[in-house]
Length: 483
Image (cartoon, rainbow, N blue to C red):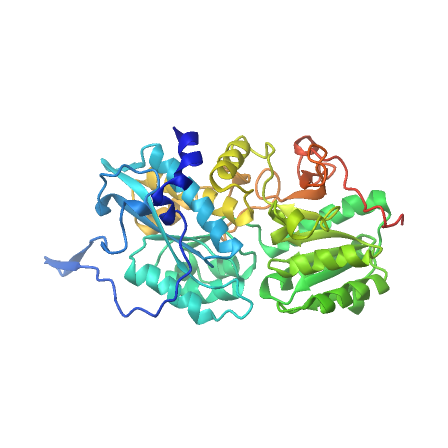
């Protein structure tokens, strides 16, 4: 029944509710009301009873994929999926959350204190992936989720600058927020510095920027060893999330035999970069003698970099982070220009854990494309919510924080992207078998000539076991090197 639904549901009229739509909105003045009853007892002790907020105009069975059609709003656990609707990151967050909600609801929901509850999801457009994003847009979107729609829990998020602003709405409301799409270290440092306020935040995915830098360094060191690479450049978006990574890479690479990353090897660009400007950046890096270039790109500039690279054929390879390159459509979008490019992905169709391949197949069956990292993050996040609610038999935020903190290196939780274990700062623990990225290389598909696919390449066991890699060693483009 599961696979049949995944294949046929898109043809049904209800498909209109599968994904949120980007619409014009004005800030709502409606404020959700929570009834509080105070009863004085004896020496002045008061008991406060909190009733769940109801928002019937926002919640219906269409918010509960896979749930019985007879359920009422009182049986819904209300989740807000935060992201930019219509962008690959916001849509990816929704797709991962939707699939997990469908599976949980199809399996019978969650039994809490004798009542069966079902996952309900909704979203508001933060517009945070827009190159001209305004932080107040994200704040207002999250305010609508909390005040108008009455969500109980939140997951998702993408751009650090935006999340830093709208996170405060969630913390003001002492609402658990599982981050699934942003890397900046500051979020979990805030938990350590001001625990009572920020304890409701946990990062499920991806690793923090420092950890991403260390895994990038580890892979560069491994392939650099057999390719004789000594000179590395960095090409990166001028955004908050890249700052920590760039600083870490510039500090550590020279300590392990690589040349210092001088000015012309350290290239930042604005989000509205043009094709000509990107071409100039690549020429600058080649002129500085770069042998490998590490891109740190989360948005559309990745296509400009890739197409300009294939046009110029500079004498260096590209090995780094490009979120758009995680999509299988990237080959066609770049006209095959991404061939030989290596990027980090959360998962590929390999046994990272025993849950990875079933998730991959079900995701592709439902959405007709591969999952990107944020889809993996929201999928795992929703199941984490299920587990802590089930284990605690509670919806109370403070109780759930205590349950979430029980997932540590001594008691990790198996997910799609690895075993989740949280640090004291509520960050996902880095290192196999916990939070690690998989390094994949774009190559022509031997089973489909003229089309491309990604292969997981070996890391010599430094990052993950080579037995989960299906692509052998990373290969230099034929016009690059030898060094």
